[in-house]
Length: 313
Image 1 (cartoon, rainbow, N blue to C red):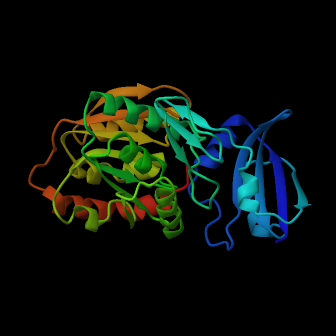
Image 2: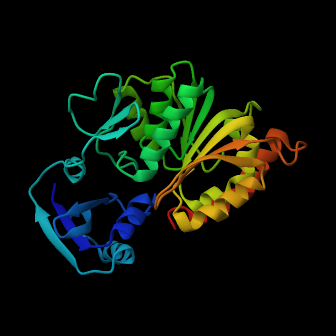
């Protein structure tokens, strides 16, 4: 396989924003792999492609970082794995995300092995680590119950939920069927076969058909889809249930919080930083007449906006 690596210098903020995007190269097959890394000279984006990058790929890369692009051909290799081979394990509370074949974490830690893949999510981003920290905190306070990992990517959060609470019922959805395939493979790899996966845009009607609501929803996506899904998530989380929101930048936090306060949520905790992570609790539905059917209607209304804004900050 002829693999080409294209590098472009960037700022730390550009690197974080680029990796947080879920679909930077839509419609391009085979999809390139984008990695952000810190080098001795600063941050850079590294793009791995099968063959020289097409002009459309270069244009999309330039939209992420405007510096000069340098392309080189690499020796034949499994270039998806190669692109992420240097990733270090991530420790988050009692969780350890191991991208390779290392020995695992210290005593008392739960190791999840998440290898290189075409799905978003290796545990390296601050949003994923923040979600894992809050998940650990919630489990220390009690059972997780019925859990939804919305926009699961490689499945890290869903696998973490079922690992830390074997009695939980965990559901995971993603708009990308490739991501769901990767997540299922990671579930098999980590012997987490109880997770129910589904390809779904936003909150699919199938997840709400039975009328049961979730005790905990983990939504590590981006600010625009979070705003579009606020009404649907208010119907999907039971009164007293918890909602973890991530993928938003600090300047977007106030707007996202306001949207969810209007839907009957209150903030319980916030992990501060450039990429804050919010833990919300649902007081009660602002409109109790809607029920699950209203959630489905709300999700349909928000779905087009979510799809238009997915991958943008």
